[in-house]
Every structure is written in structure tokens, then in C-alpha cells.
Length: 311
Image 1: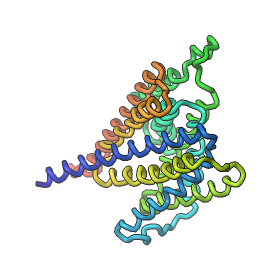
Image 2: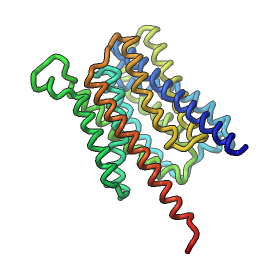
Image 3: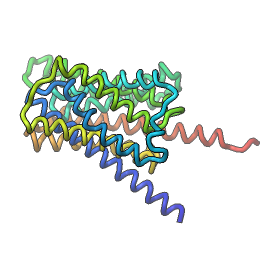
Image 4: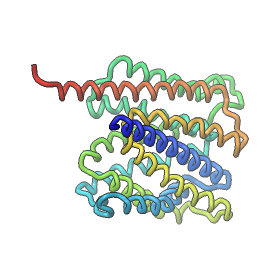
């Protein structure tokens, strides 16, 4: 009976993660559409956070302890995490304004590659040759997505270097956020981590809005509002998936966002992904999946070692 329930929990966890990938895909797609009407990254930051905040708050109220889960003993740690996260999202949204949806989404999935590098240099974690090989494969994928031959030949299909730079910077900062979250989760409730990040994002967006904000059409404002709702739901689905199944089981389904970006880009913007995007994206996804699997194996081995009886 226990195994069946565990199996059902894992199935629910996978379903929630797929829902999270779908919601993130919708968020990115509507923001890309909004960018075509002149919406800039700081505006995206504000509306995504402001209209996502009620969704997050409603979720917090349904959790055991309710608002008590928002208390924190480490406000400055939240401030640092939020600062990294805000800059990361600004870079990500700027990438959306500069690159096709599929390319922008693909570059965002280099974050696990940077996380491996940062864990080695900052956390002093051991990284074996197979994980370094995965890092190298991921960067080969990035080079393919960049279409270097187009730069050399001066062809018209080269990706803007500015967009590539913002995309890789967003991934690097996302990896940095992952490192800080490992430390925050030791003492802080997940509700506090999510809620205060949305509050911080709303605050920074509100400060920037008078300087860069513009009036837009009702349709564009509807897109911005829907991006906040979709982003809030995505965050909740992702968090709930981790309550049902191990991260190593559900994390691979994040790469469905690349599929979603290709579909939405083709459907809404008539953008057909290039062979470079598909081939490079496949290598980046393979690198991330292998890294996640090796991390799962490493943690499982460490758990067995710490729980093994003395001989």
C-alpha cells in the first residue's frame, strides 16, 4: 500500500512539474508578445511580480502555519537572494526582447552548467571528470546556438551578441541564486523565500517603473497581468512538485519549457527554430539532465555512507 501511495505521489509530482513548465512557457510567451509592443524588461519585472504576488499570498495562506511561515531570522540573506534574483530576471527579460523565444529559453537552461562551476569554486564541492565533460558539452551547445559561422561569414542569421550576453548572464545569476537557496533552505521556510522575493521584485519594479514605464494598449496590459498570474502559478506548481517527489525525478521535466518555447514561438510569432537552436538546445538539455542525474547519484551515495551501520 505504501509503495502505491509513493508511486501516486511521484506521479503527482511529475504532473505538477509539467504544469510548472507549461506555466513558465506561457509567461515567457506572453512577455515576448508584450515586448513586440514596446514593453521593456523593468516593466516586465514589475507586472510579473505585482500580479503574481496575490497568487503566492493565497498559497501561503493555505499552508500549515499560514502567515507565520513568512517570518524570517535572516532578512539580509533574503535581501541578497532577492537582489541576485531581480538582476537575473531583468537579464532574462532583456534576453526575451532581443532574441527569438526559443533561443532565449534555450540559453536560460545553461544555468545548471554554471551551477556546477560555482559549486566547485564557491562551495568547494568535488566535481568529477564526467560532470566537467557535461559542462563542456553544454558550452558546445551554447556555441552552436550562437551560430558562429554566421558571424564569420557576415550572414543575416547571426544572433545578436547583446542578446547572447544577457542570456548567459541571466543563467549565471540564476546559478548564483541556486547556491544561495541551498543555504537559505537550511533555516528558512519555503513560503518566506518565495514571498519575500516577489515582494522585493515588486518593490524594485515599482522604483524603476516611473523612469521606463509607458502606457500600452489594453491587450498589452492584459498580457502583462497574465504573465504575473502565470509566473505565480508556475512558482507554486514547482514548489508543490518538490513536496511530492525528489528533485532528481521532477527536474528533467523543466526542459519541456524549450518545447513550449518552440511551439509558442511558431504558433504566436511564426518563428521557426533553426537547426542550430534545435541541435544546441539538445546538447544543453543533455548536459543539464546528466548533471542532475550525477548530482542524484552523488547525494544518494553520500546518504548511504552516512547511514551505514559501523563495522
